[in-house]
Image 1 (cartoon, helix red, strand yellow):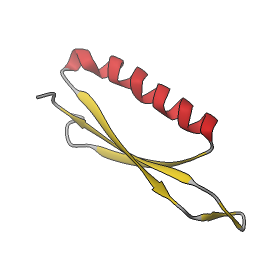
Image 2: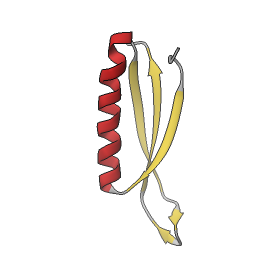
Image 3: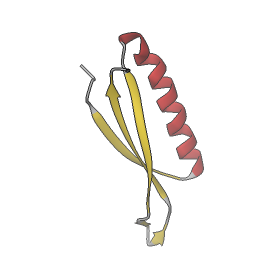
Length: 67
């Protein structure tokens, strides 16, 4: 079962963030008939990528039963 499963990813760039949010919305629709909700929490991470400081969005995603 998916309940309690947590995954995370880091996203760099506005297009990638946009695509990730769309993917989460589509995934929520697909699991809704199974009485599962996908919850996500975004956050900022300031690592260096290729020697440059970049703003990175980190997303934690969890499957759970809706309240």
